[in-house]
Length: 168
Image (cartoon, rainbow, N blue to C red; front, top):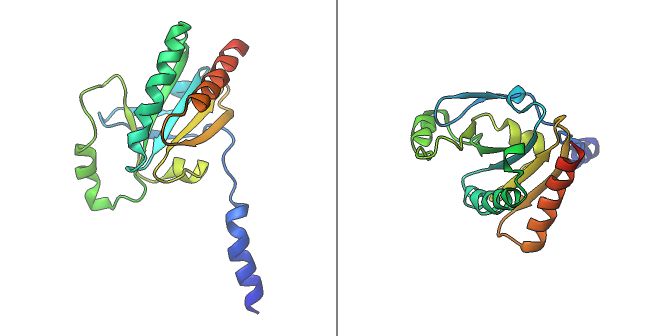
């Protein structure tokens, strides 16, 4: 009698479907500006999403990727999205967490995902920068869970982005 229940519990993680395109969303950033999927229509989009422990890796990866695109004069052809996975933050702590978000650079907003929508949809790895590249039609092209920058991985990511830009 317990076998079907145990079997289902063991199998259920395998049944979870990971999204293969950019999900529909409407989220605020740390400046109270609203962002939604349609804002990125027709653009190659690079999403860096993480929990608090993984946030330290986001800039470590975003900066060299952006610098590489600048070398080819292609930086303005790509949209970067920073996303804070805040799904585990208790409701009463939200205003405190929001107050701790960086405010000095309003050109690089961080979307606040209080419901963990992205983490669930893309199976984010905790304590990592979760990088996802979407093409101009919102199709997921690549997804990686990253920590320390590795030159070979950086080169591979930039090549993926460049190949997408070449296809545009």
